[in-house]
Image (cartoon, rainbow, N blue to C red):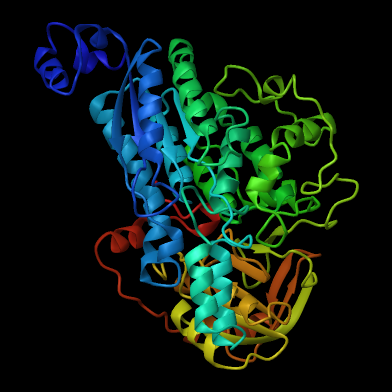
Length: 547
C-alpha cells in the first residue's frame, strides 16, 4: 500500500503520532487510506450541503475496511461570478481544484480518493485531479436543486434582467423573481454545466450507476455516499484506476450522450482537458465526427421546457442509456467503478421508452444536433456552437464588435440592436481574458429583450450551460493569439452555417492577411494567478488547461 509511507510501524512512528491526534486508532494504520475531497462551501447553494455528504461518506468508508480522511478544496460560484471580473477565475478554479486534490493526496500518500462536487468546475476539477493521481477513485455529484416559484431558476433571473432593462417588467417584479427562483441546496436545475458533467461522469464510469440525476435535498444522495464507501474497497483491492476506466471510447460515448441531450458546451472543453491529461490524443475533429450528425432529442432547459427534477421524476437517465445501447448508438463496453461495464450495470433496466422529455431518436425534437463543432477562417482550430434550431441553422449578418464582455452588456442593455446583427465579443479567451469567461449575462439579456432570434453572438470566450440562442464560442485561435476574430471590424459580413459546420468572415485571404499584419493586440491587466494561467494554459481546442 502506498500509505505505508506514513503508517508503517515502527519506522513511521512520528507520522503515526500526528495521525493519532486526529482520531486514528491502532487498527486504522493497517487499512487502505482513502481521501475525501470535499468542495463544501456556503459560497453557493450548489455546495452548501456537501459537508453532510462527506460525513456520510466518511462513515461508510470507515465501516468498509478502509480509513477515511476529509479535506477541502475550493469552489467558485459561476452564478455569482457571471457578468463580472470574478468569472475570470471560474475556469481557472478547475485547475486549482485538480491541483489541490493531487497535492493533498500525494502529500498524504492516500491509497484511494473519493471526490464530491457540485458547482460547474468542481466536477471536471475533481475528475482531472483523480486522473492526475491515477489511483482508485470515485466521483460523487452533490445533486440538482429544485425549481423555484413559478418554475423559475437562476437563468430566469438573468433573463429577467433583460426584461427589466427593456421595460417589460418593473422593479417589484424583478425583485420577486430574484427572491423566489433559487431555494434550497443543489446545482442549477436545468441541463446546464453541472448536471451535464454529472451525466458525463456516470457514462465515463467514474460515478455510481443512476447517481448523476438525483435531487440534492433527498435521501438518495446520502445513499449514493454510503454505496460509494462500500465500492472503494473493491477498487483498491483490484487496483482499478481512472486510466482503466476513462478511455478514448468512454470519452466519445459520454460526449455522444451529452450531445444528444443538448447539454453544456463546456463538456467539450472539459473532455478535451481530460483527454490531454490521460494522453488519449482526442481533438475537436474527433468530437465533430462523433456528434455533428446526431439529432437533438431533449426538451430540457435552457432551450426546452423541463427541469432535471422533471427528468428524475420520469425515470432518470438509466432507461435512456439502455435504449442507446440497444440501438447500438453506444456500446457501453467500458469498465466502470462497479467493476462491471456500463452495459452490465444496465442489464436489469427495462426499456419502456415513452418519455415526454427525452424523445425517440426516430422522432427527435430536431434532426440536427444543438451542439456543433464549426471550422472556418474565423476558427481555424475549431469553435463550439449551441443552436436549438428555433433560430434557424444559418445566420448571415453584419458584425458589431466589442473587446470585452462589459462593453457588450452595456450596449445590449442601452441601445437598439438591429436584426441580422452578429455580436462579436473578443479578448475573452483563455489568454486574452485571461480566464475564458462565460457569456451568460449578454445572452440572457438578448433573450430578456426578446431579440434572440434576430441576432447571433460569437466569442473566443465560453458560454454557460444556461446560455441559448444562436451562439458560437470557444473560437480558436483567440483574439490574443492574432486569430481572425481579432481583425473583425464593425459591419463586416459573417456567415455561420451549422448545416455545413462553417463560420467565416467574408473577406478574401489577402485582406485578412493585411489586417492581421497591421493588427495591434490588446493586453489586459493580469496579475497573480491569472498571470500564471495566461502564461501556461493551452488553447481552448485543447481544453484550456494547465498541464
